[in-house]
Structure formats: structure tokens, C-alpha cells
Image (cartoon, rainbow, N blue to C red; front, top):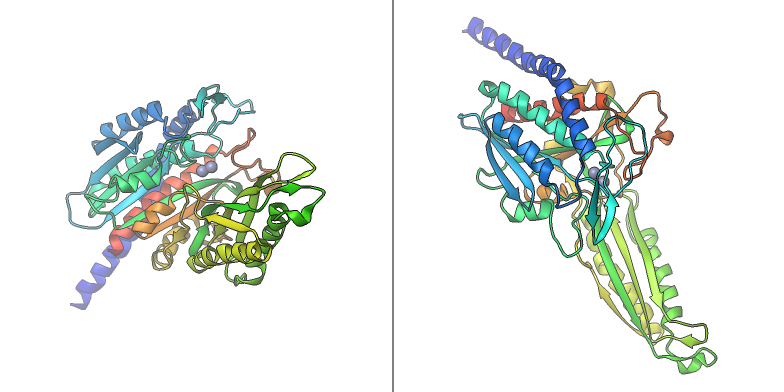
Length: 429
Ligand SMILES: [Zn+2]
Ligand SMILES: [Zn+2]
């Protein structure tokens, strides 16, 4: 009895070790292929909701792997399902597909010369956020997981998502629409993993955070209405300009005086203000628009209550009226790493990257529409390093700029992470 259980323990230990070293070997073997895929995607980027050739390229490969493939999800999205044939959980892995209207500025042999149309304008197109690497890494992980099918339980859903950067005017798209179209159903997803390449994180390192890792985005509009008068006779007016000035300053005190800033950062920005048309007229109306960024739900709810309160209180005190639209058009939830799932998967990060390469990260106030998946099912979103080691973080060109650069060598860790997260999740559930 004792002998048997010891043997079982040893066998299990050997298997567990085995899958990581097997994954590492397979990631080595497929690395040059992953790099080729990435160079192809990089050279031929397409804009949000226009990822037609990109989708066809992915579809072809997923079919070659023998996956059950669905296309046209949220316009150009591609979803492949790998069924192990054994009962078990459904793990989803997600990569985004879109490039940006940016003119690439470098001498790379695979540099983009593509152009596209965005909101009626002819624009250059570049993978200036690294989504080319995301697709290549996920294809690499799909290849390895198909190879290791006999070690899987349950199913893996490979989600290639369009329009992460936002749809063109008059269109919807991205993760939100994929969710609406049922991408997390049939088979129903139990957990989802995604990652973003990072231009200022060293190659070989992975950054994680429990809870809010990227912010919610809530755009707003405020219209302040007063009474028009000659600029020389302000007592005859109700002045929406001075009222707006007070409102803008008061909004800043929501973050600085009302939120518990030691928990998480938050931002309220007024990005545009319009009112009046000449120096000697006090106008009837001022309009402003802005954005709110929050990293936890309490802060988000607090601002939803506080912003209209401040606006109304100040407008009342100035005898003006004000209308608040919150949220204005589309908003994104918080990219929120489910604490229980994050805790559980941390050991996968440590074993895959090596403990010294796993960084408990600060959050960022940018946003990511992966958050729509995480609203439906527990999910973990990570950053994987793409910065060459000899470049200082402060010298690394930022995402969305013409000089943006991430190194091919960063992708191997991403491939291994996606694969091991899937295998470990299946082993634990
Ligand atoms: Zn981006
Ligand atoms: Zn991005």
C-alpha cells in the first residue's frame, strides 16, 4: 500500500515535471516558426474590424491543426476549439489582431508599408501595439497543445479577437461584441487567459497583478447652460464659462479628497472644452468632455455618484444648470485579475519564467477590452517582456508610436506561459 502510493506520487511528480520540460522543448522547436508568423503579421497589418487577411491566415492554420473553427465572430474574429475528448474544464486563450493608423519608422526587413482607411481617411497601418506577437504566440501555443492533446482534459478555446483598439466610427466590435455573440458559450468557458507584450519590460520577464491591472474607462460629457449677455455686462448673464472653470477644478477634488488613494490610483481628465465665439460675449452654453479611469469597483461607483453631485452643486450655486452624460458612448470595465485564480496560477508563472523573472506589477491607467471577458468568467491578464536587455526602460519607444519595437526573443516565454497555464489549470480542475 505504502509502496504503491509512493510510486503513484513519484509518477505524478515525474509527469508534472515532465510537462514543463516538454513544453519548453516544444517552444524551442517552434520558436523560428512563431517568429515567421509574427513577421508576416507585422508586415501586413490591418486596422480594427478590417482584419480580413489576418483572419484568413489564422483560420488556415487552425484548420491545419484539426481544430473546430468558427469565423466571422464580431466581424473578423476567429475561434478554434481543441477537444481532448476527455471530460474537464474549458480554458480560453485570447489574442487580439488589430494594427493601428501609425507610420512605422524603422529599418526592419519586415516593416509595414501597408495603408488602410480609417474614419474616411487614407492612413498608414502598423502593428504599433504588438498584437502581431500576440497572434503568433497563440498560434504557437495552439500547435503545442494539439501536440500534447493526450495530456489534456476538457477543451481549449483559442480566441483571435478583432478591434481591441476600438472600432471605426459608427461600428461596434472587439471583446464586447464577441461576448454578445456567445464566444464564451458552447462549450462554456471556465477560465480565460490573455497577455500583452510590453515594450518596456525586459525579455524573459512576466508582470502580473491581483485585482485591477488595467483601468476602467468611462467617458463623460457635461453641458453647462447659462444666460447669454454682453461681455461688458456680466450681471445680466448667468455665466457658463466661470461655472465651468469651477466645475473642472472641483472634479479634481473627487480623486484627491474623496477616494481612498492608498488602495488604487484614479484619474479624472477633462480633455476638451468648448463655449462661446468671441471676446465680448458671455455665451449661453459650455460643453466639455473627459475620461475617468479607475482600478476598483468602489472607486468607479464613487465617481459615478460624485461627478454629477459636484457638477449640480456648483451649477446651482452659480444659478446655472448642467447636464451630465455618464458614461458617454462606449465604456470599458476594469481589467480585473480574479484574485483566487491569480493566486492559483502564480506558481505556473514562477515555474515557467523562473521566480526572479516574475514581477508583481503596478497597475496602469490605460485600458484593455479583455475586461469584457473577465466580467463573464474568471480571467488573468499578464504582461510579457519584449524589451531587449541592452535598452533602458526609459529609452524604449512607447506603444502606439512610429518607433515602437518589441523583440522576437520575447515571444518564447509567452508561448510557454499560455501553454502551461492551460495544462496547469486542467490539472487543478
Ligand atoms: Zn494598443
Ligand atoms: Zn494592445
